Length: 253
Image (cartoon, rainbow, N blue to C red; front, top):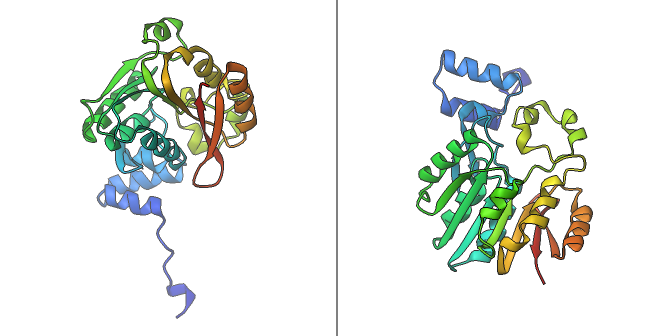
């Protein structure tokens, strides 16, 4: 067979666009956006995470397979027990919703600073059948008034995929990533501003025997271990499916 007769294999993004849009102007516009570097999830409005399907838009970070490791650990921790979870910076709601979908006695409070993200998260909770067990709050996780309103010892799990990219690194990111909300990416000078807040200010919110599960950057495990020691936690780092350090598991002695 001559090579000129071979068709170029269709990429996953191309297949997703052809499944989502009919032929004609809609598919042409979709491919134009893809060629311009826009993430396919924003073009289709759909992302797949864990076993669930999520509505997404530029109001929220696109759920990524790396974060599935955190959900896997949360589901294992909860098991069949009746527990309460706090999800800080919920975005699309993927951590809160996928964990609740696999733990029938789990109640979750999910928090975000973005009204647009919360609107999507509420839609996703309803779509995935957990709206009765996941409640949403519009708040800044760093706000002392909000933190003070939460019950001490009220949560068996405090989970978060907080912003953890250092501010100076943001301009170097791939264009498709820079189209995602900076609020969900910018973690301050060293990328760990939000981790400091959670470890310091949410300590009293953790129930006895509870756990914090925080996503981290692949190169932040040493710094997170140091923060854990500073604030009195025992820290264990779990790797994602790509072999990179990804989730800090923190407990109080």
